[in-house]
Image (cartoon, rainbow over all chains, first blue to last red; front, side, top):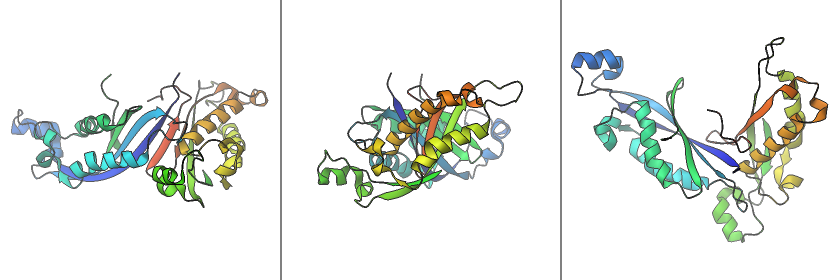
Length: 140
Length: 141
């Protein structure tokens, strides 16, 4: 049995967004999304927790070098999402609604392929507010 | 929580390799953390007490086996880290194994801990970095 240790790195980014589906009528959008449908947008301080799993290297004592993970998160998350309008500036949200669910999936898709061999993404958790978060564990 | 110092260094690497790999954590004088430990146990709710286990028993076990052992210590000076780098990954695995042994030991068989199973150890090394180990099992979601 492999003995995996799970490592979680937490970062924060600030972004604005609008919930709107162009396939719905204006009334339907207001009914489904409520205040989140404000066409001028609104914002959050998002907290992201990325959890990776791996075996502890017998030489280094590490699951992975945290410096590498920090660089990946800076490049794939902070540079892309921080202080941005998600609908207008993040390519996948030109056609997807930037709900917290879709943000979690987007971050997984950006970060997971960048991890070194031997480490695997376990979970992406995105807090939209301190009392509301989404967990994504990847495709089964 | 316990406060301890450590230095990340492997004698099998050159000084240059140690500095490159461990960065500031390779400072020869060491550095410290306030480690926060979360111990997760599972079990059936006892019908008489309404508890999985008595938290007084769990606290006493964790104090004795973990906090008394590591608080205000230099981890590099402890026997378990004589040949192992005291990364939080290694600390996490070691504490899980210590507690698993403690909870299974005979002198605790008449306490409420005998009914509980150790599920997970989680360490917060800093506000941004945490580590968890569930004995090789997939962590419960």
